[in-house]
Image (cartoon, rainbow, N blue to C red; front, side, top):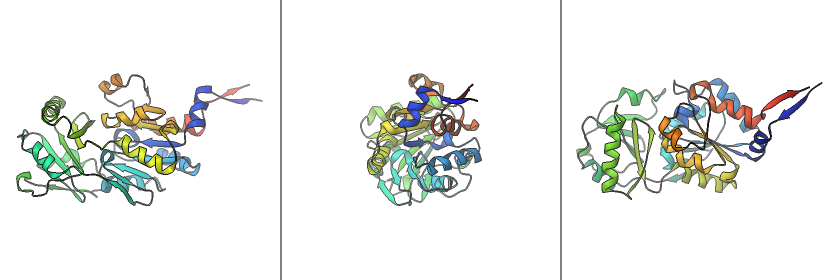
Length: 287
């Protein structure tokens, strides 16, 4: 005969958590930019047990919607790092763009032609050059790229502006250049070491999530979150339990040293943690 024993700290997490929040790339998605079957099963069980599920990503909503649809149930979707919120019924609840003049002021700085510049528009993403690397993030091409000359674009307003280059140091230099001239105009983050993103100063994943929690009458103390990038930093710090992926940059792990690091994205790190700590608890046999 044996009894089931649950670790005390795990029980505290299990009893408190009512909301599960996850980033997509490098977090919920594997290295093929897909949600594994095991992860789908775990999240479907969370939904069946009435946990509130929020996906918060830097991706555009047209890109993210078909990915999260694969989970098989409706959920809240925060996209473009918080510039858009869609309800479980896909209703747009919140929308905030960067104004065109602000973007023009940045493009007029004379950005190195080697850097790929991208503007997230409502239905297309405009870029100064074709990028196979960026295209590879979409397993289904739902959000189409459009190569343009930004000098000929009249309306530069956008959901998000970002820059990519194969050298992180190059993007760091650009970030410092922009922030030196416009210290209070934008919020910014490295969603990946090679992807520097700018949004309106009022936009952040944590700000958008707070709006959802208010609607659903929950709070951050009842929430657990998972992420791997600097655009997840405020979200991870805001929730009762923030978990960093094992594949997160070492610089982020060092900065957020107080957070627990879990398994890699390609090893179903999020789903395994939720299964062990939230759904079932850390169970051991006592004879």
